[in-house]
Image (cartoon, rainbow, N blue to C red):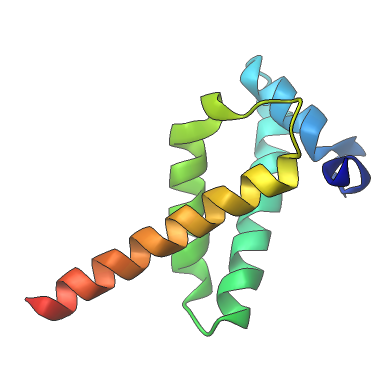
Length: 100
């Protein structure tokens, strides 16, 4: 799968890091979070949005939804969907704030 070829942290794949994180391992979880934060920042910057705000929103959502990760599926697609949901949540917050 696509996620198997992406290496982060200390040579563990994202899939292995997320699986270890679900089992309670802190170091792989921290490495996975670093990968997600950087990916969210890059995506936000490419879209002209505040990068750090996007990263923090993605990390909060990933932490809340980490139990939904299925190791049989592509971890990068799962991460990208988390980032997308976080991005849409920020957009809704901005629109609600503008309406006030």
